[in-house]
Amino acid sequence: MASLSATVGKLRLANPTILAAGILGMTAEQMLEALKGGAAAVVTKSIGLKAAEGHPNPTMVETECGYLNCMGLPNPGIDDFKPEVEGVAKHDGIVIGSVYAKDAKGFAALARKMESYGASAVELNLSCPHAAGLGAEMGSSLTRVRNITRAVKKAVDIPVFPKLTPNVQKIAGLALAAEKGRADGIVAINTLKAMAILPEARTPILSNAYGGYSGPGIKPVGVRCVYEIAGEVDIPIIGVGGICSGRDAIEYIMAGASAVQIGSAVAAHGPGVFAKVCAEMGEFMTANGYKRLSDMVGAARGGR
Ligand SMILES: Cc1cc2nc3c(=O)[nH]c(=O)nc-3n(C[C@H](O)[C@H](O)[C@H](O)COP(=O)(O)O)c2cc1C
Image (cartoon, rainbow, N blue to C red; front, top):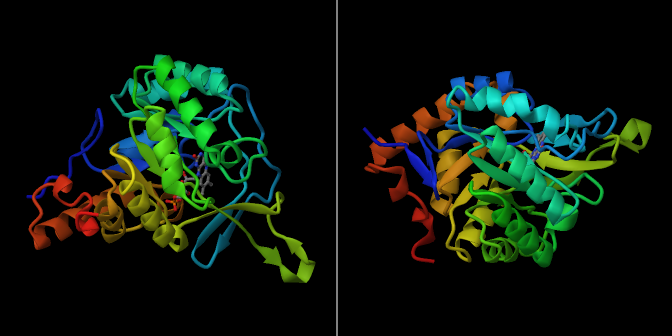
Protein backbone atom coordinates (compact mmCIF):
# COMPACT_ATOMS: atom_id res chain seq x y z
CA MET A 1 0.00 0.00 0.00
CA ALA A 2 1.19 3.51 -0.82
CA SER A 3 2.48 5.50 2.17
CA LEU A 4 0.91 8.93 2.64
CA SER A 5 3.17 10.03 5.49
CA ALA A 6 4.60 13.49 4.88
CA THR A 7 7.43 15.60 6.27
CA VAL A 8 7.59 19.37 6.23
CA GLY A 9 11.06 20.07 7.60
CA LYS A 10 10.96 18.90 11.22
CA LEU A 11 7.20 18.35 11.15
CA ARG A 12 6.22 14.69 10.68
CA LEU A 13 2.66 14.14 9.48
CA ALA A 14 0.63 10.91 9.20
CA ASN A 15 -0.75 12.22 5.90
CA PRO A 16 -0.23 15.42 3.86
CA THR A 17 -3.56 17.15 4.67
CA ILE A 18 -3.80 20.06 7.12
CA LEU A 19 -6.75 22.26 8.08
CA ALA A 20 -6.15 25.77 6.62
CA ALA A 21 -6.31 28.92 8.79
CA GLY A 22 -9.72 30.49 9.36
CA ILE A 23 -11.99 27.50 8.89
CA LEU A 24 -12.97 25.55 12.03
CA GLY A 25 -9.87 26.96 13.73
CA MET A 26 -11.47 29.11 16.41
CA THR A 27 -11.98 26.49 19.15
CA ALA A 28 -10.33 23.28 20.33
CA GLU A 29 -13.57 21.43 19.66
CA GLN A 30 -13.64 22.54 16.01
CA MET A 31 -9.97 21.68 15.49
CA LEU A 32 -10.43 18.23 17.05
CA GLU A 33 -13.32 17.71 14.63
CA ALA A 34 -10.98 18.38 11.70
CA LEU A 35 -8.46 15.89 13.12
CA LYS A 36 -11.23 13.34 13.55
CA GLY A 37 -12.18 13.95 9.90
CA GLY A 38 -8.68 12.86 8.86
CA ALA A 39 -6.50 15.99 8.90
CA ALA A 40 -2.95 15.24 10.06
CA ALA A 41 -2.63 18.72 11.61
CA VAL A 42 -4.65 21.90 12.07
CA VAL A 43 -3.87 25.58 11.65
CA THR A 44 -5.65 27.91 14.07
CA LYS A 45 -7.59 31.01 13.06
CA SER A 46 -5.08 33.89 12.78
CA ILE A 47 -4.67 35.33 16.28
CA GLY A 48 -3.49 38.82 17.23
CA LEU A 49 -2.21 40.46 20.41
CA LYS A 50 -5.63 41.82 21.34
CA ALA A 51 -9.20 40.69 20.63
CA ALA A 52 -10.62 41.99 17.33
CA GLU A 53 -14.17 42.00 16.01
CA GLY A 54 -13.35 41.96 12.31
CA HIS A 55 -15.59 43.57 9.70
CA PRO A 56 -19.39 43.84 10.08
CA ASN A 57 -21.66 41.57 8.01
CA PRO A 58 -21.94 40.70 5.20
CA THR A 59 -18.48 39.15 5.33
CA MET A 60 -18.98 36.10 3.15
CA VAL A 61 -20.58 35.43 -0.22
CA GLU A 62 -20.67 32.28 -2.32
CA THR A 63 -19.62 32.68 -5.97
CA GLU A 64 -19.75 30.30 -8.95
CA CYS A 65 -16.40 28.72 -8.07
CA GLY A 66 -15.80 29.39 -4.38
CA TYR A 67 -16.24 32.06 -1.73
CA LEU A 68 -15.40 35.71 -1.16
CA ASN A 69 -14.79 36.64 2.48
CA CYS A 70 -13.81 39.80 4.29
CA MET A 71 -13.85 38.48 7.86
CA GLY A 72 -11.14 41.02 8.78
CA LEU A 73 -9.36 38.72 11.26
CA PRO A 74 -11.91 38.44 14.09
CA ASN A 75 -10.32 36.64 17.06
CA PRO A 76 -10.28 36.54 20.87
CA GLY A 77 -6.66 37.72 21.26
CA ILE A 78 -3.68 35.54 22.14
CA ASP A 79 -4.21 35.32 25.93
CA ASP A 80 -7.79 34.04 25.67
CA PHE A 81 -6.77 31.59 22.93
CA LYS A 82 -4.52 29.56 25.25
CA PRO A 83 -7.14 26.89 26.20
CA GLU A 84 -7.94 26.28 22.53
CA VAL A 85 -4.36 25.40 21.56
CA GLU A 86 -3.85 23.43 24.78
CA GLY A 87 -7.16 21.62 24.22
CA VAL A 88 -5.83 20.18 20.95
CA ALA A 89 -2.23 19.63 22.06
CA LYS A 90 -3.30 17.60 25.12
CA HIS A 91 -4.95 15.10 22.76
CA ASP A 92 -1.63 14.86 20.86
CA GLY A 93 -3.09 16.86 17.97
CA ILE A 94 -0.55 18.78 15.89
CA VAL A 95 -1.48 22.47 16.05
CA ILE A 96 0.09 25.15 13.89
CA GLY A 97 -0.57 28.54 15.48
CA SER A 98 -1.42 31.24 12.93
CA VAL A 99 -0.55 34.76 14.06
CA TYR A 100 -0.77 38.31 12.72
CA ALA A 101 0.61 41.60 14.02
CA LYS A 102 1.54 45.02 12.72
CA ASP A 103 5.28 44.59 13.25
CA ALA A 104 8.07 42.06 13.82
CA LYS A 105 8.01 42.53 17.59
CA GLY A 106 4.29 41.68 17.71
CA PHE A 107 4.76 38.59 15.53
CA ALA A 108 7.62 37.39 17.77
CA ALA A 109 5.59 37.89 20.97
CA LEU A 110 2.62 35.99 19.52
CA ALA A 111 4.79 33.14 18.26
CA ARG A 112 6.42 32.78 21.67
CA LYS A 113 2.99 32.43 23.29
CA MET A 114 1.81 29.91 20.69
CA GLU A 115 4.95 27.86 21.42
CA SER A 116 4.35 28.03 25.17
CA TYR A 117 0.74 26.81 24.66
CA GLY A 118 2.01 23.68 22.86
CA ALA A 119 1.83 24.64 19.17
CA SER A 120 4.09 22.44 17.01
CA ALA A 121 4.80 25.25 14.52
CA VAL A 122 3.81 28.82 13.83
CA GLU A 123 2.33 30.23 10.62
CA LEU A 124 2.83 33.93 9.92
CA ASN A 125 -0.15 35.60 8.28
CA LEU A 126 1.63 37.95 5.89
CA SER A 127 -1.12 37.60 3.35
CA CYS A 128 -4.69 38.46 4.43
CA PRO A 129 -5.98 40.77 1.64
CA HIS A 130 -8.69 42.58 3.61
CA ALA A 131 -7.20 43.88 6.89
CA ALA A 132 -5.89 47.45 6.70
CA GLY A 133 -2.20 47.75 7.60
CA LEU A 134 -1.87 44.00 8.25
CA GLY A 135 -1.45 40.75 6.29
CA ALA A 136 -0.79 41.31 2.60
CA GLU A 137 -0.11 45.02 3.09
CA MET A 138 3.10 44.16 4.96
CA GLY A 139 3.57 40.79 3.29
CA SER A 140 4.06 42.43 -0.11
CA SER A 141 7.37 43.93 1.03
CA LEU A 142 10.48 41.76 0.63
CA THR A 143 12.25 43.52 3.50
CA ARG A 144 9.36 43.14 5.90
CA VAL A 145 8.84 39.46 5.05
CA ARG A 146 12.54 38.79 5.68
CA ASN A 147 12.74 40.84 8.88
CA ILE A 148 9.52 39.53 10.42
CA THR A 149 10.52 35.93 9.67
CA ARG A 150 13.98 36.52 11.13
CA ALA A 151 12.55 38.08 14.31
CA VAL A 152 10.17 35.15 14.86
CA LYS A 153 12.94 32.62 14.20
CA LYS A 154 15.01 34.26 16.93
CA ALA A 155 12.05 34.09 19.33
CA VAL A 156 11.01 30.42 19.04
CA ASP A 157 12.42 26.93 18.54
CA ILE A 158 9.38 25.51 16.71
CA PRO A 159 9.29 25.67 12.87
CA VAL A 160 8.21 28.99 11.33
CA PHE A 161 6.09 29.05 8.16
CA PRO A 162 5.35 32.44 6.56
CA LYS A 163 2.13 32.33 4.55
CA LEU A 164 2.38 34.37 1.36
CA THR A 165 -0.01 36.41 -0.75
CA PRO A 166 -0.61 35.69 -4.44
CA ASN A 167 -1.59 39.35 -4.96
CA VAL A 168 1.88 40.35 -6.14
CA GLN A 169 3.84 40.21 -9.38
CA LYS A 170 6.46 37.75 -8.08
CA ILE A 171 5.47 35.52 -5.17
CA ALA A 172 8.73 33.54 -5.54
CA GLY A 173 10.62 36.72 -4.59
CA LEU A 174 8.69 36.85 -1.31
CA ALA A 175 9.47 33.18 -0.71
CA LEU A 176 13.15 33.88 -1.23
CA ALA A 177 12.95 36.77 1.26
CA ALA A 178 11.33 34.40 3.78
CA GLU A 179 14.07 31.84 3.18
CA LYS A 180 16.68 34.54 3.81
CA GLY A 181 14.89 35.20 7.11
CA ARG A 182 15.50 31.48 7.90
CA ALA A 183 11.91 30.29 7.40
CA ASP A 184 11.49 26.53 7.83
CA GLY A 185 8.91 26.38 5.04
CA ILE A 186 6.49 28.44 2.98
CA VAL A 187 2.71 28.31 2.94
CA ALA A 188 1.13 29.40 -0.37
CA ILE A 189 -1.40 30.78 -1.08
CA ASN A 190 -3.76 32.99 0.88
CA THR A 191 -6.88 34.29 -0.88
CA LEU A 192 -6.94 36.44 -4.02
CA LYS A 193 -8.12 40.03 -3.56
CA ALA A 194 -11.55 40.16 -5.21
CA MET A 195 -15.06 41.60 -5.11
CA ALA A 196 -18.69 40.98 -6.08
CA ILE A 197 -21.38 43.55 -6.87
CA LEU A 198 -25.14 43.29 -6.45
CA PRO A 199 -26.40 44.99 -9.64
CA GLU A 200 -29.93 45.73 -8.34
CA ALA A 201 -28.50 47.59 -5.36
CA ARG A 202 -25.59 49.09 -7.33
CA THR A 203 -23.27 48.22 -4.46
CA PRO A 204 -20.50 45.80 -3.54
CA ILE A 205 -21.92 42.84 -1.59
CA LEU A 206 -19.22 42.61 1.08
CA SER A 207 -19.25 45.25 3.82
CA ASN A 208 -15.58 45.92 3.17
CA ALA A 209 -16.24 46.17 -0.63
CA TYR A 210 -13.43 43.74 -1.41
CA GLY A 211 -12.37 40.49 0.20
CA GLY A 212 -10.45 37.28 -0.45
CA TYR A 213 -11.42 34.73 -3.08
CA SER A 214 -11.00 31.05 -2.13
CA GLY A 215 -12.20 27.64 -3.29
CA PRO A 216 -11.97 25.69 -6.59
CA GLY A 217 -11.62 28.83 -8.77
CA ILE A 218 -8.20 29.70 -7.29
CA LYS A 219 -6.56 26.27 -7.61
CA PRO A 220 -4.73 27.02 -10.88
CA VAL A 221 -3.31 30.20 -9.33
CA GLY A 222 -2.18 28.32 -6.22
CA VAL A 223 -0.56 25.53 -8.23
CA ARG A 224 1.28 28.09 -10.37
CA CYS A 225 2.50 29.93 -7.26
CA VAL A 226 3.82 26.72 -5.67
CA TYR A 227 5.53 25.78 -8.94
CA GLU A 228 7.24 29.19 -9.12
CA ILE A 229 8.28 29.11 -5.45
CA ALA A 230 9.68 25.58 -5.78
CA GLY A 231 11.92 26.84 -8.56
CA GLU A 232 13.37 29.50 -6.28
CA VAL A 233 13.78 28.11 -2.72
CA ASP A 234 15.19 24.99 -1.04
CA ILE A 235 12.78 24.88 1.90
CA PRO A 236 9.54 22.84 1.96
CA ILE A 237 6.29 24.28 0.66
CA ILE A 238 2.75 23.73 1.93
CA GLY A 239 0.28 24.24 -0.92
CA VAL A 240 -3.20 25.65 -0.35
CA GLY A 241 -6.01 26.96 -2.54
CA GLY A 242 -9.07 25.23 -3.96
CA ILE A 243 -8.24 21.66 -2.96
CA CYS A 244 -11.33 19.41 -2.92
CA SER A 245 -10.04 16.06 -4.21
CA GLY A 246 -7.01 13.79 -4.18
CA ARG A 247 -6.15 14.88 -7.72
CA ASP A 248 -6.20 18.55 -6.64
CA ALA A 249 -3.78 17.76 -3.81
CA ILE A 250 -1.53 15.77 -6.15
CA GLU A 251 -1.33 18.75 -8.54
CA TYR A 252 0.11 20.79 -5.67
CA ILE A 253 2.47 17.97 -4.63
CA MET A 254 3.73 17.55 -8.20
CA ALA A 255 4.24 21.32 -8.46
CA GLY A 256 6.61 21.01 -5.49
CA ALA A 257 4.55 21.02 -2.27
CA SER A 258 5.37 18.57 0.55
CA ALA A 259 1.91 18.88 2.13
CA VAL A 260 -1.37 20.70 1.52
CA GLN A 261 -3.95 22.67 3.46
CA ILE A 262 -7.70 22.59 2.86
CA GLY A 263 -10.08 25.41 3.80
CA SER A 264 -13.14 26.16 1.66
CA ALA A 265 -13.82 22.50 0.90
CA VAL A 266 -14.15 21.88 4.64
CA ALA A 267 -16.70 24.71 4.82
CA ALA A 268 -18.54 23.27 1.81
CA HIS A 269 -18.36 19.51 2.51
CA GLY A 270 -17.46 19.10 6.19
CA PRO A 271 -14.34 17.66 7.88
CA GLY A 272 -14.76 14.26 6.16
CA VAL A 273 -13.09 15.87 3.14
CA PHE A 274 -9.63 15.15 4.63
CA ALA A 275 -10.18 11.37 4.65
CA LYS A 276 -11.70 11.56 1.16
CA VAL A 277 -8.71 13.47 -0.24
CA CYS A 278 -6.29 11.01 1.37
CA ALA A 279 -8.18 7.96 0.06
CA GLU A 280 -8.17 9.42 -3.46
CA MET A 281 -4.46 10.23 -3.24
CA GLY A 282 -3.75 6.65 -2.13
CA GLU A 283 -5.76 5.24 -5.04
CA PHE A 284 -3.89 7.44 -7.53
CA MET A 285 -0.52 6.41 -6.09
CA THR A 286 -1.33 2.71 -6.20
CA ALA A 287 -2.66 2.97 -9.77
CA ASN A 288 0.43 4.90 -10.90
CA GLY A 289 3.13 2.97 -9.04
CA TYR A 290 4.09 5.57 -6.42
CA LYS A 291 5.12 3.97 -3.11
CA ARG A 292 5.80 7.14 -1.11
CA LEU A 293 4.40 10.64 -1.21
CA SER A 294 7.93 12.02 -1.48
CA ASP A 295 8.27 10.26 -4.87
CA MET A 296 5.63 12.65 -6.23
CA VAL A 297 6.97 15.91 -4.73
CA GLY A 298 7.96 18.13 -7.66
CA ALA A 299 7.30 15.33 -10.17
CA ALA A 300 5.83 17.79 -12.70
CA ARG A 301 8.92 19.99 -12.58
CA GLY A 302 11.04 17.85 -14.88
CA GLY A 303 14.25 18.97 -13.20
CA ARG A 304 13.24 22.66 -13.31
C1 LIG B 1 -13.78 32.27 5.84
C2 LIG B 1 -12.29 32.25 5.66
C3 LIG B 1 -11.47 32.72 6.67
C4 LIG B 1 -10.07 32.71 6.52
N1 LIG B 1 -9.28 33.17 7.55
C5 LIG B 1 -7.93 33.11 7.43
C6 LIG B 1 -7.09 33.50 8.52
O1 LIG B 1 -7.54 33.85 9.61
N2 LIG B 1 -5.74 33.48 8.30
C7 LIG B 1 -5.17 33.07 7.13
O2 LIG B 1 -3.94 33.04 7.01
N3 LIG B 1 -5.95 32.66 6.09
C8 LIG B 1 -7.30 32.67 6.23
N4 LIG B 1 -8.09 32.24 5.20
C9 LIG B 1 -7.45 31.74 3.95
C10 LIG B 1 -7.34 30.21 3.95
O3 LIG B 1 -6.55 29.74 5.02
C11 LIG B 1 -6.75 29.72 2.62
O4 LIG B 1 -5.45 30.24 2.45
C12 LIG B 1 -7.59 30.12 1.40
O5 LIG B 1 -8.97 30.11 1.71
C13 LIG B 1 -7.34 29.23 0.20
O6 LIG B 1 -7.63 27.88 0.48
P1 LIG B 1 -9.05 27.18 0.16
O7 LIG B 1 -9.36 27.48 -1.28
O8 LIG B 1 -8.84 25.73 0.45
O9 LIG B 1 -10.05 27.83 1.07
C14 LIG B 1 -9.49 32.24 5.31
C15 LIG B 1 -10.33 31.76 4.29
C16 LIG B 1 -11.70 31.75 4.45
C17 LIG B 1 -12.57 31.22 3.32
